[in-house]
Structure formats: structure tokens, C-alpha cells
Image 1 (tube, rainbow, N blue to C red):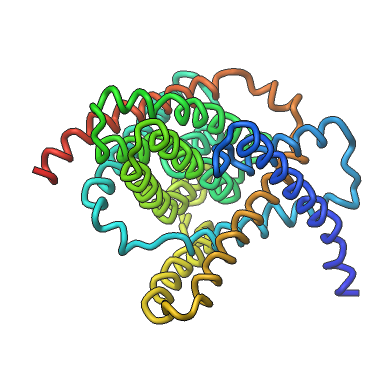
Image 2: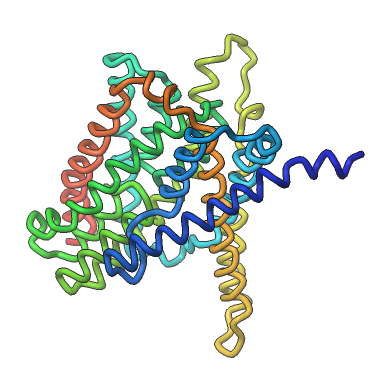
Length: 358
């Protein structure tokens, strides 16, 4: 029966949703109750994968859950990424875009070059290096999760890359607000651009901006950092097809290789959501009617739920023994990537500001 074929995925999907709910509860306790922030600086997705890894290694996951977990990792993940596009409003980026866009491009190119050299030097797996590089340069965990299917990364590589990016992202989140205040002498534009280009996760950038605002009373810095990070997130549309092409071209021995075969078409859905957001804001935004705003918020929230469920599913499927066997070298790459993007951001930003602001 056809309906039975689809029902077999339900238990795994429910399990992933339960772990999402558990992760959200832990996040609220740790970030809001313990640290005292209005919004937790810790990504719920990070907690989800940690909880998933714990349960997946402490207990044997039943076969009846596996198909649903696989469905969550592949299809619910992609749907979550598509929904993510609704939060991007390109027209509001114009104010900082003329500085942020070239700055982001320089940072991405620099990190890719460095990691390309490290692949040969440290002899780490190419897929692992690709995941770490896109996570460091674009939007952290989301970029890793979106890129993994198109370069055929396995679950352990995904988990290792996410752990890598999460670790160095949190370090950046805690250190950079204070470093930036000293180095840039309290200038909101420079500090906001630096935080927005050098920290991996959107939630971590928002948290770093919030930390800076609370410590140094600068809401402008928080706004600039957030907008810069959202501009950076849009590069996901370019980087995923690029990485898919570069990786699969290197793996394919056929001369008639075509990007059409491996193009991640869900990216088109992501772009469609960006267009929908701007179309809706233009035609349906009404002061007396909040239906469109409520719709946007619902899609935003759904995206976070779907992505966190996918993280939990990945965690449940991750074998810690296999990760341990990968060694320490990928963490060296992650650390160097963090330092590279920070240094390049500082150097390039000061040059661009002189050109565009003066």
C-alpha cells in the first residue's frame, strides 16, 4: 500500500521533533535563565545535535525510526533552508551593502585559498575541508547542512564540521565584542561590520552584537552586525552550486560532466522565498492588517524548527568512534579559518571604509 510506504517515516520525524522540543527547553534554561539574556546566545540547533549525539551513542536507535530520520536529514532539512529565505530583505541591505558585499567576497576568497593549501598540507578529507570552509565563510551550521547533500558528505563529516564551527564560533562570539571595541575605538560601523563578517552563525553574530550593545550601549552596532550577517547569508545561493560543481567535477571522471546533474535545486526555492518576502512587503504590508507579518514570522519559526529537527536527526545518526578516528587535523583547519577570516576582515574593511565612506 502506498500510504504505508509514507507512514514508515512518521516515527523518525516525531522523534526528531521531540528532540527539537527538548533542545528548545534546554536552550531557554541555559541562555535565558542561567545567562540572563532576553534571547539565548546559544544556537538551539547546536544543542539539538549534542542531545542527538548523546542519545544516539548511549542507546541503540531502533530500525523503525531510521527511515524517518533519513527523511528528516534529507527533505525536511532542504525545506527548512527554503523557508530560511523569507527572512532576507535585500532592499534594506543597500545602506551597508556597498561596503559589506566586497568585504564578504574578499573574506570568502581568502579562506578558500587558505583551506585549499591546508588540504594538501594536512591531508584532510576534501569533503570535510569544504564543509568547514563554507561554514566559516557563509553562515555556519546552516551552510554546512545545505552543502553536505550536494557534495555527498557522510553524517560523521557533517557532525565533525558542525562541532568545529560551533566551537570556534562561540569563542569568537565571546571574545570579539571586547576586542573590537578596543581595536576600532568604539566606532559602531567598523565594529558592526567586523562582527557580521567574522563570526560564523547568525545567532552568534546577533548574540555578539547584543553583548556589545549591553556592555557599551550601542544598538547601532547590533543592527549593522545583523544586517551584514544577513547579506553574508545570501552568498549561500552562490556558494552551494559552486561547491557542488568544484567537488563533483574533481570526483567525476567523465568528460561530459555537467553542473545541471548536481545543481541543488532547493536553492531556487530559497531565492523564491527572498523574492516572495520583498513582493509581499511591497504589496501586502498594511498598518491596519498584520496578516502578512504573521505569515512571515510563521515561516521564519518553521524554518528554525525544521533545521533543528534535521540537526537532531544528524546527531542521532552520528557515531563518536568514527569521529574520533578522523583525528585533530580538521580542528586545526577550523582554527586557522577563524583567524584568517578575522584578520582579512580587519585589513580589508579598513581599506573599503576609506574608499566608500570618505
